[in-house]
Image 1: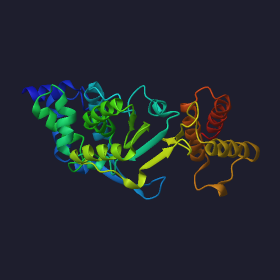
Image 2: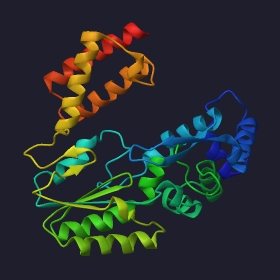
Image 3: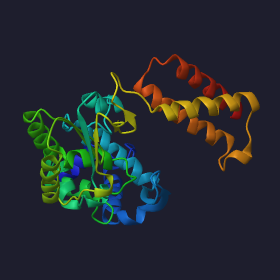
Image 4: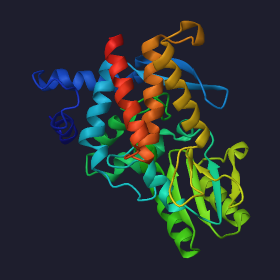
Length: 311
């Protein structure tokens, strides 16, 4: 057994340590050689309209990818400016630098995951390890779908952060020199302070182009202090971050009517349980911003109680 094969076995990727080394290797080689056979495609509606295509790996491949994430990718350093998809980080890490700023500039990377190709995965993610080259190549194949990063694989978010690590650090340092705050939450970049928005946009656009990315110009927004400044769904104009008042008001009213009159299937295409889970997600969003909000702590308690009743 060569060094690459030994390294693969040591990573325990199959989740079946009782399998013989030969069986584990056959499994990994089969998955990497025909990874496109192990995905199913889903079309999901976007909140903003349109359709998002998700490629969901089959259970065995997903299990292997989770072990790659746990034993390889999670050990690699990320940029401090990347605030999504990492343990210990919440939306607050993304919004706090932008509170009470003169202006906020939001830019979005178009078709984010699909623009990340196999050579970038190989070079910017796995080549940063000390694993043998053959192992790096196989791991890269296991995490790609038709030579691109699939949205839907558990490894994709961390790989995307690794691919953009140099970009984040360079732009972050450049912004710091200009006294501009910068964070990136997935494909959503935010800049705040007192600056020339066109200069920042051109700087970012040029660097992204070198990496094969493009801006989604329809989602570029410049918000001054006189406007409602929203960063990843959170209002940052005030002295502290806050969920939009409309969301809080509508959620408060919806839960009141549910508690008073009960569930009416005519009001939603969802099942009662699914609807309650949606309400729970909105409450968790609010509590992620203000964990001690007594009103929505009470609402979370009620929704959890209602969910148990639906079980």
